[in-house]
Length: 305
Ligand code: CP
Image (cartoon, rainbow, N blue to C red; front, side, top):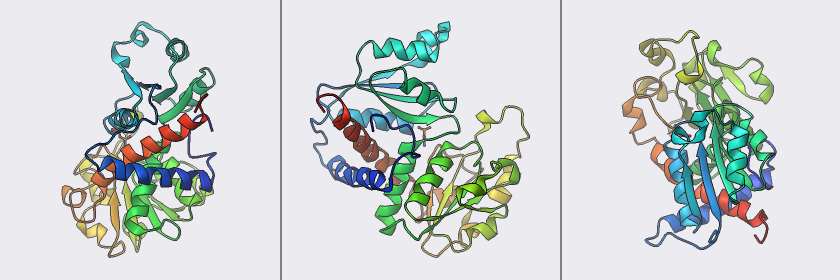
């Protein structure tokens, strides 16, 4: 593969190989000296058309730990503000001969389109409600390290599924690796026909949580709801927020995940987010290692790689 545009299209073996490679970078990132020369001489540009804390910071750190020259394009002060299109922006950056472009965009499919217009490798850092492949990979790595496996686990993904690229990438990846996936959400936040993806759907959170091994919470993506009915935070929390009482319905050793950013008191209580069953901080740590693995794997495919 020259690009990483989604989990769709990756084989079981591709995923396992990336997770194995990421393990070595978890170990390296825990050392005092965190750098290798794997990407020395390479240029990586991070092009984020949507806000990000975790993904952008970890792609920058990942590239730097591998020895690449990393540039963060500041879209807010770029010529995008003067009406330059996505494709012209990409073609302009491509002319500067980067090796890897890491792109986040609000439109589903925008990153795939861009990948067809440039010579370098492209990594999807989240496109609309389509895919966020490195998030699903870091989630899988986090689960595997804590549960020792993914096959046979039951994972409940809860909340705003319809707007979530994280949910979509995770459904594809977790199913490919043999987990059972449940979706828990009100009807208004479920995509139509999602059952065709081989998941079980619950509109009652208490029923959906029964016996699950992993509870993955999602933020209400208000920025994608333009004008649609939005439940009040208090009402949403009552029925679909994860608190200690609802979590007690999951398996006794269930673990809690959230891709971030979290809205405390809306989809998750602080007690659960900061509690002993939470893997949220570890997910962030795994994010750097997984992105190092992805950049490294793509660099092997580049000319002279
Ligand atoms: N999980 C995630 O993509 O977070 P950011 O939007 O902060 O990158």
